[in-house]
Length: 364
Image 1 (spheres, rainbow, N blue to C red):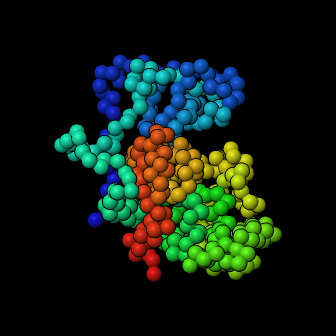
Image 2: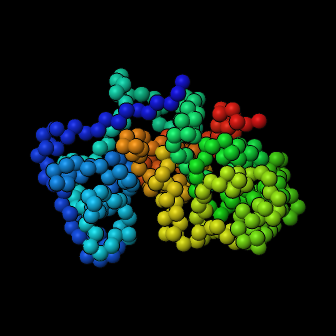
Image 3: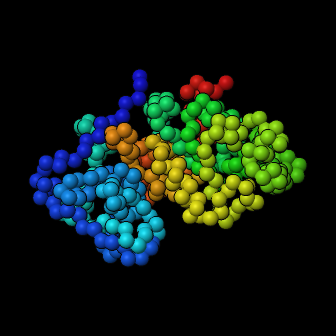
């Protein structure tokens, strides 16, 4: 069975409330980086604005941003810090037409009837069975491989296990990865696995701590910095496996965002938080599926920059967001932050990626 998107049901703009609504109010910014009083703040949902009598969709929305009308009539969604003096900023706090703004929260709701108001096990937990979710994910990934863009947000846990590291490499080589967001740790320990077959000094096959193994990741950072870049290090030291090897080999873009905790860091790590956010956003804006794995802070950051929909060739489709973590608290954080469209798996991410690679029949 092939993957099939749920149909998007747009608002009926012939309804009286839409026809009678006034045009949205707009005010020019007086200062760089400061929104005018009563600015409108965006959400993850499709949002429509009535301008010159027509309802216009802001196609690239995300949480906690402002909407700017461009000179050509299109709508640009930006962080408030990126407002420039003279920008025409949309105003309004009511989201149900009265101020020319409509936030459409049920565009993808299922038309299947709900038989009971009270049910057991409606939330995701360690007791949840994910068999159907895995089957759905396989079909989604097969579709997105050729017709979409899959962005992976990764913590370092993958690099600690040989099978997980190999599975992710195979996902990259087989075309199921179009971009990666991570930090210094994932790249460092993955390259450590390629050079020393350890991660944080533990053998990636047996998880046994090696003598003086705690030096290994520091030695790797030192050597990568000596080489000047990750691709050059891979070439200099004849690395032939791993996640970073796969990304470099397949020319897949990645963003490594820095942290106050970082050792080194590696040359590609972006230490300026707003520069890193901008680079992350450049990959997120093309993604149609986002899969976040065992990295709570990166997951929340990505979720805050990701809408629940994407417009592709003029068609509004869901933007699928997955959160995978062994902690129920971690996978629930996106819902707490307002990213209500997230699909979560409470499971070990190393087991998850091996399961997915086997389900796609690319693990051998």
